[in-house]
Image (tube, rainbow, N blue to C red; front, side, top):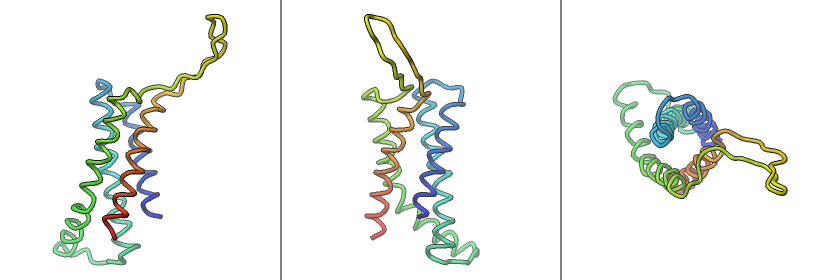
Length: 138
């Protein structure tokens, strides 16, 4: 359940940054991915700490031990997520989605869903990350 919460946070932060950062497309995409992962990592860490593992200690020694363990388990999945998202970039599966009907050279209707393909590539990375995190947690 908390993996789903972290994924929703990741998708929301990614979308917000990817639509608003005034950077080149590739740089904006990657920075949005990284920042979204960091924010969702902290959401997942604290949700898991308090609700899954029921660890209430905020003592620095305990907190750092838990944090380091959680981080090392998640860092591999981060690189898989980024790798999948960037593979989508290389394959041209990013950017706006244009939906239209063309008849006789004339476009009858056109809908643009801004950065939808970016969101889909991020979602694919999130799915791979969830699967890998599940496997690593076992």
